[in-house]
Length: 325
Image (tube, rainbow, N blue to C red; front, side):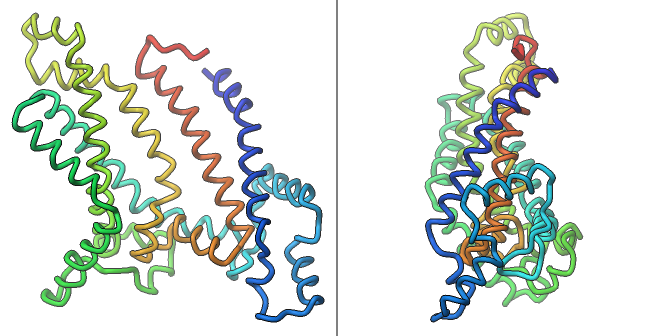
């Protein structure tokens, strides 16, 4: 197994290097210096700012410097737009993202798998049609609509009627005091519970249809007919035989979402003011803050590559028929 992991990691190094190269090249199409200076800067000011940012060096040299920082995990470079180092920004933004994405992933997967099993069991009958109709309606509505409805009907309007209404429209300034602010139960309910409900509502439609298709396919296989012919109960067939043999697509679906535990949900974080990875990255893009954009992109790429490798390993652990080679 470890040999396979090392080999897959080595194979993905060129992919990672290419992602970083293309990202840095794309960033340098526009001039970031103008965003950091006044409207009419002098040539001397532009030259000094480029020297300060390291943009006076050839592109290949800039690429080599950044890759060296990644190899040694040196994130001490200071943001161009904020009075923090990139390391401090990563440390501060990961916990708020996790406070929203971990519950979202756990709740969505649990509900969607159960609904998929129920729909597969009642395939073609009224419960299945009703559940799939709700799923299609849910996935057909834009996430922005859910956010607007959630903020107005879930936070703004009730807070004007009920004095102690728990949900807040956005995060207040006190949330910046600690990166673990959102893990305090009262704070999590106030600032994260409504975003989690919206995220789960959006994701359930897609996941439910996926898991339903998986379970329907499994329910038609010979081992299910054999188990039922031998008198196995419906509960045992669904939650032991079917669920166990459907673990490969389930693992695939969950692992696709795993990197978002760290990266967060950009729209949710922006509209609810949650200072997570997604919102921090959007602010950096608007400010043309190259150190932050480059480091965050490299982190995201590394997470997706690692999740792909971990997915293959979990395949082998979940199904003895899968061999890592």
